[in-house]
Every structure is written in C-alpha cells, then in structure tokens.
Amino acid sequence: MEAHIKEGLKFIEKIYIKRNYGKFLSQVLGLKKENAEDLLRKAYAIHDVGKCLEEFQKTKKGFQFHEFYSALIAKEVLRQFGKAGSIATVAIFLHHHDWIREKPPRKPENLKIHPDCAEIIKELAEIQVPMNVPWIAPNEFKDWMADIFASNIRAVYALLLPISLADNYSAIRNREGEPTMLGREIMEVISTHEEVKACLRYSQ
Image (cartoon, rainbow, N blue to C red; front, top):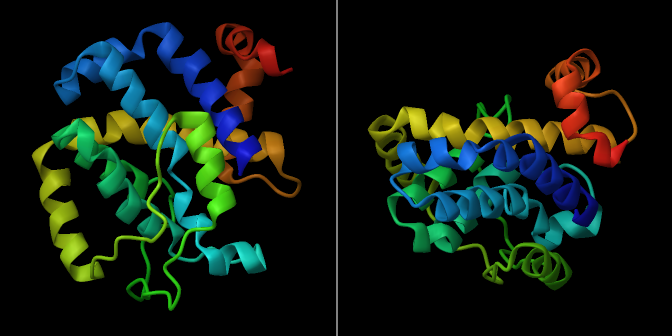
C-alpha cells in the first residue's frame, strides 16, 4: 500500500497540481486553491483505505467492496472540507470502473483497521484514520451519495479523474500481471505524448 500511495501521489503532483489543476478544482469545489489541492492529495491517499480492514490484511486478497468501506472512512476523515469533502467521498466510492455490484456490501464481522496501514497513511498524508470503519447501512449511504452526486456532478468527476488515473498508473508501476484496459490506455498516452512523458520522467 505504501508504494501504491507514493507513486499515485507523485503522478497527481506532476500531472495535475504542478500544471495548475488546483485552480480548476478550487472553482468547481468552492475552495481556496491550496485547500483544493490538499483535498485531492488526501482523497487519493485514502482511496483504498478500505483494504486496510484487518480481515483483508490477513488474507491479502479479495478486497471485495473495499471502495464502499473506503468511502465510509473518507466521509468521516474529509469532513473538515465541508461539502467538498462529501464530493471527494463520492469520487472515492466511484474510483473503480466495476463498482456496480449485484449485491449490497456486507458488514464485516470485524470493522477494525490494521494499525500498520493507518500509520502509513498518517505518515504520507497527515491523515488520522479512524481505527474502526464508521459503519453506515448501504441503502442509507446510497441515498446520501445520490444527493451529493446530483448536486455537483462536475466536481465529482473533477476529483474522480485524477484519482482513478493515478490509481491505475500506480498499479502498473507497482504490480505484476496484466494491466487494466484503462491502465494500458494511460501507458499508451504516456508513450506517445512527449509533454506527459516529460512530466513523469522522474519515475523512469
């Protein structure tokens, strides 16, 4: 997880923040530029925090519904950003293309977060993650999320895009195996566009 967060944060910094994306975010989120940039960094840092559930850390596989558990934590952690934090929470929930499920997320028997994961996130993003997932029933969360999404669709996607791209790019850089379709498209853009390639030269 540490390598995944670090690589994704570098991607966001080079491709988005250093190219003045924060100015656009500040406009759609109604935040000061520096606060909008801080929100983007923090949202990315916790986009996979649901994988920190102790039961996931024991098996190191599956991670089903982790985007839902991540969003529950984000809703609490990003509260300091007001409505913009809620928008970021929705973006975190949507950050996988396959987030639509046939069944609602189950409530884990153990809602505890592994302390090692919490410590990594604290060190990398100065975020104090709650040690237990603040549970909300899926239907209740769905209704809340639908209201937030409908209130500012543009802002949701303004955060979702960099989070999703950074997630897929970092996955390619840090994992073996077949990349996702989006991951392949990202690498194709990097290989064919000199401006993007130059921005990411730090990691080549």
